Every structure is written in structure tokens, then in C-alpha cells.
Length: 434
Length: 198
Image (cartoon, rainbow over all chains, first blue to last red; front, side, top):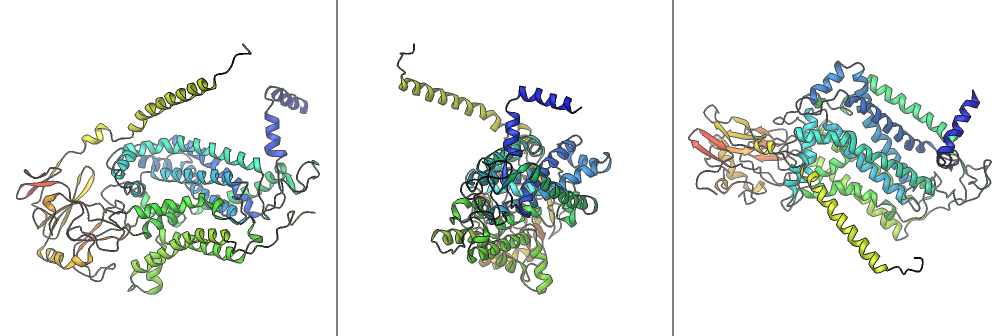
């Protein structure tokens, strides 16, 4: 029997001479640093969620009807009448939120261990492009059920482009294909969500991994394993502190996948809306262009960026400043490799100022999240009494958080450019080598 | 053949011109695809004028009608509501309606053709939500000194009873007044200017 399989393997290999070397290069002979910790799960988990979203998404399109008249009802049909339809949709909606949780943690890993620094700048830039496309993908997917939050979310987000001087109004009509979000809008978003953006996303993921494997993985010590001491038990030429990605990290990552599926299953079966955080109650009402939901707030993963739009006031007769600040809050991340100029990569060997600034940045991000999800609007009167001026205190808090968010990048540049940082000596090899 | 001298200048010229012509072709081919995103003939045709009778609107009451799928607020304003307008000027961004958010015939203190009747596109100038009508002159949770007007539930912009935005709000401008005219004393047509107006 084994002879049959090896013969088949040889037969294929003779006809595709590049396959086996490629498999070796990226799997069994890709030597990843041996000191990966918990933070290194999130890259592979993001890939798992992407595949889950594609599979569940394909099955959703089989019953979904992309028209303003039929979309809302077809989603209800999936939920009630299609065999197991509720499970497939909840997997897809939960997957969207988990995707962002995993990606935020994956990006944070890159920041704390300096994985964006030379020679991995391109890996970081491709990753940021993935993040941008993912945001567009998530937004358009959110519009498809055509609930009232879908409709108003689409209207508000598309209106962001209307603040651009001169071309704004025309641009908004061009994006919507109408004077309000309607059939035309829904259909083009469907096309982009199910085919155009996923293709771009997959291509970027392939490039992201290819770029990573060219320069090699970083690690929690920020030590250059690839150009360090040579010779491990698989090859005298391989990095001494590297182990083959397969089977060592594939097996390790499977443990992470198990945990992710456990969490996902708990949410899908016991709390699919997660108290309004993953699926908002107002989206159980069909789209109505004459009635705004009492509270328009984005899904949690957009809330920090959306809070920035709200916190920047209009001046000079235009609301464009908030929109510039919001896009700026994402685009500034692209510049990380050139803002953080300290050659020391890992937070383990960096100065105290960096650690404090990073903590403040995380708190500012969470603070903006609280503003964007309207948590502050509920908490302020509950904690300080109903007679306080909620708008005033919310604006004060949110504007402070916005300043701290952007302040982190300004501080980081100055701190590392003018050499104010005192770093610790970085070891030659990973701290856990034999 | 092997001794032939390569004319690099000629080769570069051919490369550049081929690329340029090909580039023009790509741009030309992209035009139909980009233009296909414009509002279709059907969507544009749906923007016809709307006629509305005002007979059944009580003083202080608001009616919302759709014109080009936009919510049009029609409010029968009471003398008490109108009396609040001159008092608010210091609290407003644009009390004199200098920004072009209304036809010339509605550029006045009440932002209307007849003071009683407010006809306005009920879309917040911040990000396009529909503000709530808060018509009573009484303390509201968001403003203890509320003088009646409109309150946007999305990002909490406040407008007075003529749709003029308060200072320090997310919204930058007063709400827009659509073109409209009175066919007779109790009927208006939205989407068409009065005769003689530009």
C-alpha cells in the first residue's frame, strides 16, 4: 500500500519539479526561531479564520439575495428555514469579530517585538494593506443583511467621503450609485464583498507570507537567528536557534486552533450576539431610510477609529478634519518602521520610556473604543450622576484619548530619533538556547 | 546577424511609445467601468418633484415626507417657537445663514418662505443622520435650557427650530432647505423654485 502512495508521489513530483522544493522551503526546511511564545499564535489563527470566513461565506451566498427588497428577508430565511443556516451565519458573524481580535493581537505582537523593523518593513506594509482591505471587507459585509444599522452604517461611512471639498457630493453619489444607499449600493457591495476583496485579500496574504519567509521570522528576543550561529540537528547550515516550521510549529499552532475553536463555539452556541457587541439589536429591524436608529454606533472593531471622527470638531465650515484624523490614525501605523528608529527590536531590551508610552497608547486605544461604542455615554451619568454635562465630559475624555493616540507616535519618533532611549544589551542568541 | 549593432535609442523610443499607447488604452477601457457606478437613469428619474398639502398639520406638529428618498421635514411653527429664534443668535454657528445651505428666498431669520412653515431636508450636516424633532420649549436631558429644535441621535448635534446648528457641535453647517414653492395657501411643491426665483 505504501508503495502505491510513494509511486504516486514520485509520479507527481516528476511532472511538477518545483512543488517539493517549495514545500521544503516553506514548511519542513523553514527554520523558525525556537523561542516563539503565546503571541506567535495569532498569525496562523488569522489564516484559519480567513479560511473559515471564505467557506461559511460561500455557503451563505447560496441562500442570500443581494437586493434591497430581498436581502433582509433572505437573511431571516437563512436563520429560520435553511437547514443549519443559523449555524453557518453565526459562524460567519462571529468569525468577523474574531478576525479583528486575532489581527489586533497579531499587530500588537509586531509592535512589541519590533517585527516591523529592518529587514521586515515590507512584511509590515503588506500586513497593513491586509488590515485596510479587511476593514473594507468587514464594512461591506456588515451592509449586506440590510438591517436598519446596515443602512445607516453605510450612509454614515459613505458620507465620510462627502466631507472632501469640491468632489465630495459627487463622490458619495458615485459610491452609492443613487442619492441614498439602495439596490445599486447593495449589489456592488455584494460583488466586492464576495469576490473582489477576497481575491485581493488572498493575494496579499500570499505576498505577506512570501515576504516573511524571505527574511525569516522575528522572535520575542528580537535576535537575528538567520544570520547567527549555524548548525542544528537537522542541518549544519541551518540556524542553530531555528527549528523546522513543520512539524514543530504546525503542531504547536494546532493547539492554538483548538483554543480558538473552543472560544468560537462558545460564542456561536451560547451568545451569538455577545450582548450586542458582535451583532447589534437594531440590525434585526429592516432598513428604513426615514427612521434613524436611536443610537448609531459602529461594531466594536471600528469604534476606536470612528471615535476619532466624532471627537474632532468641525471648523472652517467643513467636517473633513475628523475624517482626515481617522484615516490618519490608520495610515500612521504604516509609518511605524520609520517612526521607531531604535535598532533594538524587542520590548524586553528597551527603555522605560518606551514601555510607559506603549501602555498609555494601549489605554488610549481602549478609551477610544469606549467612546466609539457609546460606553462612555452610559458610564458617565451612571458614575457621576445624571446632572453632569455628558457631552462635555465625553468630548474632553475622547479628545484627550485622541491626543494620546497620536502623541504615542510623535513621542516614539522623538524618543528614538534624538537618542533619549537607554536600551539594555541584546544577547547574541535567543535566551532559551541549549 | 550577430554583428548587427543594437540601436538603443530606437528600442527605448519603441518601448516608451508602446507603453504610453497601451496605458491610454487601459485608461480608456476603465472609463465604462468607473462610469457604471454613477446613479443609473432609473435612479435619476426617481428624483421628481413632490406635492404636499399642509391642511392637516397642527401648530407645533412635524410631518416627514420623502423627496428623492430624502426625509423632508415640514413643521408648522408656533409663535412661541418663532419667538426663540432671535434669542439664540450668539449660540449659533451661522445665525444669518451666510453659508449656502438654502435658496436665496429662504435666506432670512426663519429660513422659510412663510415664517410659520419650515420646509427642510432633515439630514444632519455632520454624517447624514435624521435628527429628532424636539419641539417643546422645556429642559431636555441634553440641554437644560432647550429652546425647541432638532437633536441628532447619532453624534448629538443640536439645531434650533429653523435648522440652524449650535456652536461646538460635530455638525458644521445649518441643515439644508430644499427648493420649494407654494402652489396655493395650503399646498407646497418640493423640488421646484417659486416662479421668478433663480
